[in-house]
Length: 78
Image (cartoon, rainbow, N blue to C red; front, side, top):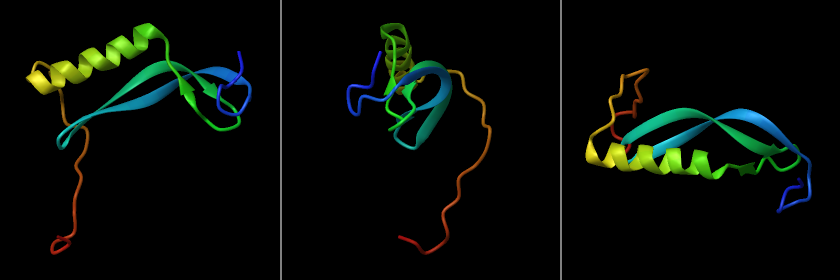
C-alpha cells in the first residue's frame, strides 16, 4: 500500500496517539501504518474505534487513569 498523500511506502509501527478532553490527555500505544516519507498515519477501523471509545469514556469520567507526569506553565504568562 502507498501513502495517499505523497505516494511513499508504508511501514507497520507501534505509535503513541494522544486522546484529549479539556485539560486531560491520555497517551495510548496503537498499531498504525506510517508513511516513511511524510509520516502520515493510517489506522485500522479497530484502532479508530478504540480511540473513539477511549475519548467517550474520558468525557464520561469512566476511564481509570494514573498520573505519569505533570505539566507546568510559567507564572504570569496569561
